[in-house]
Image 1 (cartoon, helix red, strand yellow):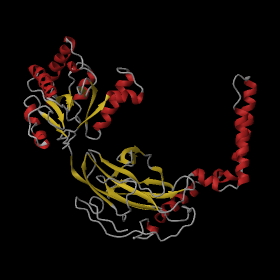
Image 2 (spheres, rainbow, N blue to C red):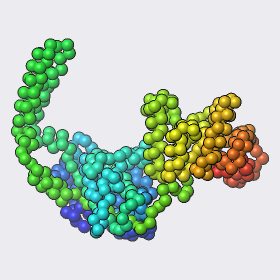
Image 3 (cartoon, rainbow, N blue to C red):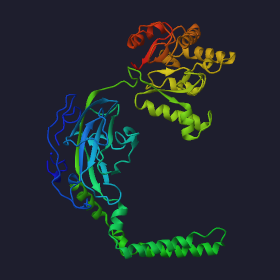
Image 4 (cartoon, rainbow, N blue to C red):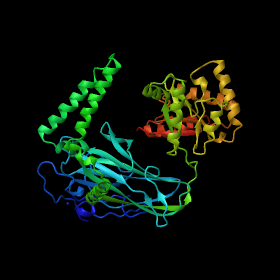
Length: 479
């Protein structure tokens, strides 16, 4: 397609990528090359030049890692398949070809989204079902997903670097099945400050600066001044601001510009790069409770340090509650944890005791596939801690959600002494609840055990050492 329809022009041959254009799991890909047909000297004006001549835009699957030096690919439409109560994501990559932003990097990009609509009039609404996040590098690796405002967001691009946006579509449980279509419009724009200042001459800028500074000088020294004097200063500042706003620089904003805004929007869309999204919603619904539990731990001390919260305060409980509900949205069953000596770990999903009303609210949540039960004696080796643990077990064993329970006692034991401590704690738990499950993580066998010399053989023998005291194993092999 040409630039007027908003697609990348065609020059760098890139390999095909599954997951973007076509639909299903074996997506098609059009081989091609990318080149820029415009030749710019200095800074381009995005109000006059099609955005496709200023930046590359292309789509990549959610499984791709898009680094800052990722090379451009041809732009294809996005085709996704989803059940109800399912989320599908895709990435939109951008890389500048030229500069249009003056001193603020390569330039600013505006991203606007439309609702996704079916032929029967049903919608997946922007901001509710369709969300955008900026992919932010952490230590040079694309990692964090920072939310963007919708239906319109702006991001800055840097010369010679690829940036990406993560687009997610959440299909509600009651969404009618069918094909839904919409667009994401990517447009190179000038920031309002750049547009305003670039229209001023030097003398106009200086005059505006003097009047605004004069207004500030009048207003600032009002501490402990008599009321009449303060009122006088405010009136003087108001007069100055009115004079500034009535200057020629702001004249256009006094007009009734409703139709002008619409013309500007139409002109903007004609210059935009159009990314077409098509999603097929199937006529079945994924269950609320994931069939395969995925658990994720958050250190409570990280939350305390990050938000400046005191352990056990109302703010602390509120922060844990927000993290709990946030992770459930992504079909992750969270637990919180506190570290003890060595790699002992107090892991718990609910910060309230089992006899607290909030406990049932947490454990009975249909989105929760598994929950960690705290083993208090791991940190507090006292009779009171043991009594507390027994009380917790007696209550939880009687609940219908008990099959979702597990204990996480030690993170990656390294020697036989630590293995024996896990076995001892597991025996204590199973004396009160024989069907209790214990999770143990490991990446190697015990260093002082007589295991095969081959490190991988030692690694795969670990479950034999932990059974029957551990029922769930989480591994990461370092061999």
